[in-house]
Length: 160
Image (cartoon, rainbow, N blue to C red):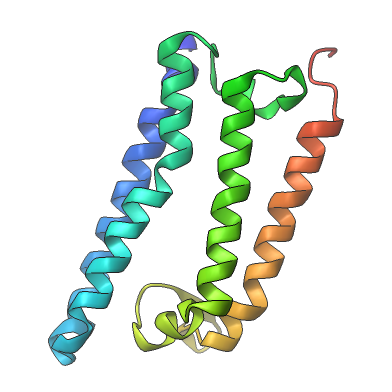
C-alpha cells in the first residue's frame, strides 16, 4: 500500500494526460465541422497537459528526493515542509492564472467558441457550457478549493 501512496503522482499524471486525450478525441467532431478551431484546441490541450501536471510533478520531486514520504504529506502544510509549501503555492498560482485567463484573457469565451471541452448534464441531455456559466462556476470551484486549503492549514492531522 505504501508503494501506491508513494507513487500516486504517477496515477495523477496519467489521469491528467488521459483527460486531455479524451477532450482531444471529443473535439475532433467540432474540428471537422470548423477546421479553424484546430489551433485553439491544440493550444488548450498543450496547456492542459503542461499546467495540469505541475502539482503532480512537484509531488514527484518531493517523493523521489525524500523530502516527503507519501501523498498524505501534502494535506498537512502546517509541517512547513518546503516542497509541500511549494505544492500549495503552485495550486494558488494556478488558480490565479485560471482567473486571469477566464476573466481577462477571453478564456470563458474560448470554452463557448470551442465546444465539447466541458459539458453539463441536464434532463434534456448534455449541452456545452456558455461563457456566462464558466464565469459563474469558476468562483464556486475555487472557493471549494480555498475551503479545502483552509481545512488543511487548520486541522491537526498529527493527532488521531
